[in-house]
Image 1 (cartoon, rainbow, N blue to C red):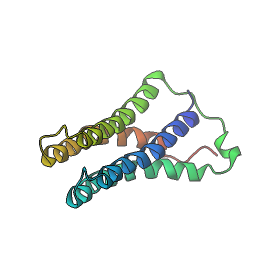
Image 2 (tube, rainbow, N blue to C red; image 1 turned 90 degrees about the vertical axis):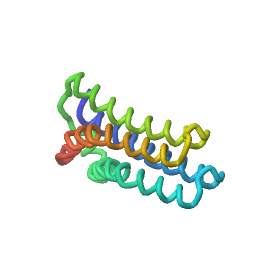
Image 3 (spheres, one colour; image 1 turned 135 degrees about the vertical axis):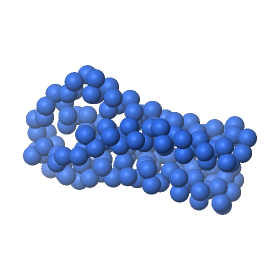
Length: 143
């Protein structure tokens, strides 16, 4: 896989995931599965990390607004790098979705348990995901 293709896949994934996670939390609030306080706390936990990662993807998308720039040749990446670049962001986003769904199904004994689970998920996976994202998006898009 080329660097340009991987950047495109990861960018699309984060942009869509960002919107879907926030809509899922909003849906829980609108269906009264989250109180006002729980909603604001949940958004306060999720938005900073997810937004920071999505900002890298959006910055890349804006940087390659011309098709010529986007189609530029890029280097082929190692299988191990592609695997890590796909594994950690995917695991991170899936874990967040699963935790939000579990909250919606009342599978946590308390909101505190849900809140700690979100924090733990972000602590465990956000660092790895941010490292992958920085290595992939830290430099300028190909010219």
